[in-house]
Length: 463
Ligand code: B12
Ligand code: SF4
Image 1 (cartoon, rainbow, N blue to C red):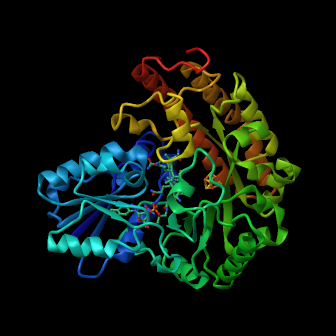
Image 2: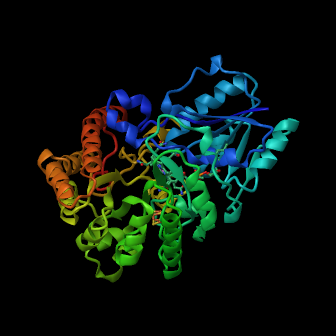
């Protein structure tokens, strides 16, 4: 029995776009979901994982599979439907699962044979049994997995062309920020994989560098921090010789022992969502956690960097409190915090989030020709109507912000700071140049987007 597991091409960045910027190689990540499905699949299935970000293959030249499984984020939905239509035209059954399939079940059901909602661990084997018998159900619900049932991912099924391997150590997030799908999809309970399983799986990853995909590797409560320390101790003891990057909340900076253990375990970079400059903004999006303790963000960033860990800071543009000038302010504040890279994203109502419900009820979802418009749900296009910023205005804020933060003098200052502190100046330079190069690509994409939108979506205030 032959199974194809497919990651449809990602409109945002793929290795195919390497011609446009060779630094993009560092921005393409392995589709861990499909490697986990591989780990759940019994040996009688011959599995091929096809990641279209490495270049879409000529499916007609490949052997006919008995079953196709497709994963997709919302932004990949259109390509996912094309791939599904192709295989269904050959009479091959197609199953779709993952975040978009879960949040848009009806839409997906119209285009595939079977939809799997939620996490797949409890249900995937049953799907395969039914597929063999030719009796696939239209819908399966995996719900939330027992965390001990998460198998080691099949890292051997995908090997070439990536700069980073991938692993997951926790699932779920209690914070439930309005714009984020994680609590809706993975639940509010923070579930922890057993440490020995993680260490063993780390060993099976061939890449030297690894992305730990957890939404928050360290968690928010004292018992989470204690577990993170145990994990880092075990990783250091196992002498894995891996360098890894992860996502964490800002409390990562609050515990010197945690930082030092993380660095010893191989942590080289951390992605932190600051999201907004102001307490009102943080309250608006429900990220109250960042408000705690009268925090000095600059000092927090510096404490992390002292352990030779790079900090990527993320902010959102387009909150209801954001007014003209927000782009310049974010660039300035992010520079003041001293982050090594800045990632600004447009406030985007992703399906299944609280923000989606709110914006839908206020008739603020401007790109709403679905499924075609899903391609713009990359957080890099302003798909909604913002309170104080028009379409042209919000795009201009983003351009101003990026131009300000990634100006050559500021890049050189940051890289020089890294040389001075002996903190991986090369990685910092590559990261900064990659972002800078993509700014030019973004500008063209925005011009096309404005033409597509016909400049119709005004700010809420104007309409
Ligand atoms: C790692 C990651 C990335 C990596 C991508 C790695 C990759 N190629 O998969 C990078 C950094 C590139 C990335 C980029 C983006 N990401 Co991202 N990312 C994640 C993150 C943190 C973890 C994903 C992961 O690997 N999970 C571990 C695996 C094991 O879990 P899983 O994917 O959910 O798979 C399970 C089930 O969903 C199911 N399943 C999945 N696929 C299938 C398929 C079949 C057939 C079946 C049966 C089951 C099934 O089974 C799996 C096992 O239980 C998630 C948050 C999260 N917790 O999921 C956000 C998340 C998926 N990303 C999100 C977003 C918005 C983006 C971007 C658009 C934003 C941006 N500008 O960065 C881009 C778009 C990329 C694109 N493809 O177009 C959103 C997606 C929301 C949505 N509705 O689409 C999420 C949920 C975060 C959020 N804030 O809401 N991302
Ligand atoms: S943005 Fe981060 S902290 Fe907020 S709900 Fe999502 S994963 Fe949790």
